[in-house]
Length: 216
Image (cartoon, rainbow, N blue to C red; front, side, top):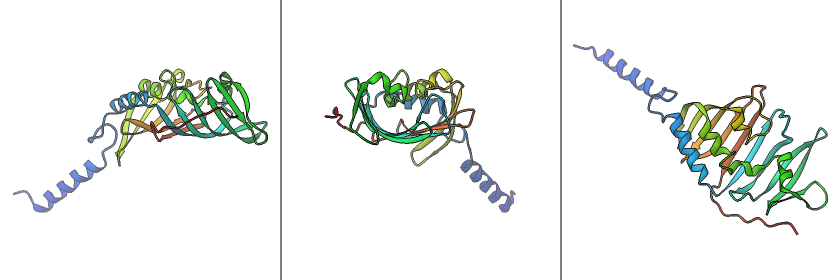
């Protein structure tokens, strides 16, 4: 007869093993499937609120942090802290009708061609299906689910340099990435570069209407 103590011990071991499983095993959703669904979900997003944080130095990115709203039509408004001549300057911007309106610490808005936005950082890339988060999620490789709790599934993956460069300019190497997905929408992405710099993107308020008008 199997000893009761041994039976209880076996049950406890089974429970512990089930609670500590990691990766794509142990009942966690498969990483590739999570990111494929998130890529499809993000292609359908019409607008979002974003927060971008840059930790470390990126040669082609002068923005240290930015926050604002944008839509899939390429309109956006928000604020950013930009490094110029070794100093951080807070600016306000409006991007509408292919024009960029830029306001520094003093004075009013200055109108510039929208193409110049890319020289600082173009937030509209986030929802662009050909170079934004949907592209990044769809082309990630070596995907592995590391956790799924509270409705948020976290997947670690590698993103090829030519793919992530569409979202974060100046990338010259494949990037270790960590994606947090809720309801087939990307809510957080962290890109860690080989040199140690990291870019974090937080997304929220999906499909929430907002209006953008050119400054007077």
